Length: 264
Image (cartoon, rainbow, N blue to C red; front, side):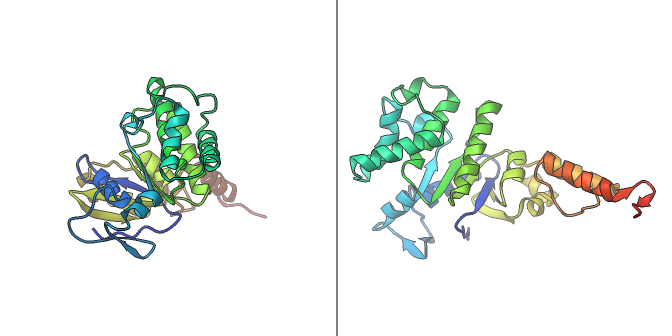
């Protein structure tokens, strides 16, 4: 696998179970060391001597929040990472307060995290990494087992992190989320990178998606159907949301009617 990740990218990593997505994340994060090849961060080769730099700069949020949470209270949990960086008490408190506000957990500071709901635990695990202030965030199935309301909160948080200039990679099986959120899609199969491109370009490859057990996003299917019937004039625009599709349809209707182009 030969892969370059650029600063500020928002990438969805897809593939069947056991394809190697989680292993890829653990290699990028420095938890695992490659048996062959090398990992570079900001142009520097990462080895045993500077692997701690990679772990500080690349934060990973695991699928199972319980595997990440260890402290008896939310405040102590989020404080754990910054304290291990030997930061001053004032800086730790500032980072913890910022992380709690970022995931909207004010009022939960003294509560035991293991008694929180699944969505609340997920937000605590995300706050853990926000408090470390990495440049790159790796999310392993962030919406798994969440109800729609909590999933929307997580997606909003992903948008906020991108808006702050961070780099995000999200491992997911959700093609609808990947199509509307990502700007780059990676498909991993049997430890190899089989696709790398924009969502419309990758999902247009029907045979490749079929091999990876991925369906075509509903919005892309609707777009192609409308184009084939000449009902969508703005071809190739690839709307990512229902609202974008509605706007394109409205623009087309404003310009073209059943009798041809509008006059005047």
